[in-house]
Image: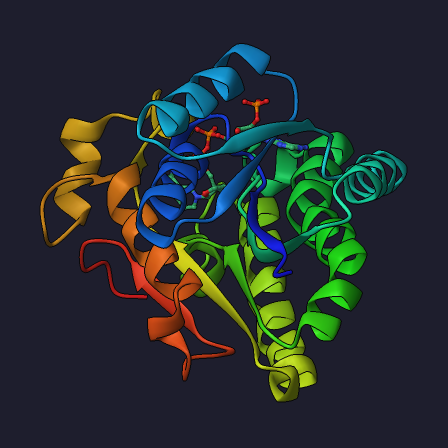
Length: 246
Ligand code: NAP
């Protein structure tokens, strides 16, 4: 009997993660595991949208930064779903704590680094053996233009996302032989809760396409990388930023 195939989206309750969850369910037919940290209502809303479109989705709450919580939740889930395989991992959960380096608090450095980098490590480390046995898989890491070119006021976030891009390249080479691809996307300004306080009318002038991107546009790219059509792309980071030089 073939296994039921799942895609896990960390931070799938809102923003880019929500749109990615919806698109992967609809276009690739995966059952979806929607991870979130605290916003259960938003996670349920994502689940409802997927179900209304005829897809299947479950919620899985954990803080990606807390390795014990990640391992407990994922191991329990795997035990209760012995006929399932998580074949696609989208490491999307991320936060910003902006401010100039000279005034940065240790907590703002640690939280941003830990959510992006430990989040990627904790989740991917837990699932990688299963993917290797499966001899097929897709890992997509959500980086940022800040990780490509560096953004002043975001030394912590730029470091975290550049680290994630390095990890993407290294892991891709480790596991390519088992037909598992590892890629990153590097969005620019995207309209979500994360950018809600930014002055769009000013900042859009920095973007050649003269607007912020939409979460659905990033989701389309992630969905492509998660599909079989992207089978010869690995270790790559794809910019999606409206033309900002990166
Ligand atoms: P968002 O709207 O603020 O959503 C963030 C999501 O991450 C939420 O689902 C949140 O869960 C989850 N999350 C945060 N910390 C978590 C943790 N410790 N454990 C588990 N889940 C956690 O953000 P977004 O704009 O969609 O961003 C998604 C990704 O894209 C991030 O990695 C971000 O850095 C990256 N990105 C965004 C932009 C942009 O302009 N928006 C640009 C480049 C890159 P809750 O709902 O439970 O809080």
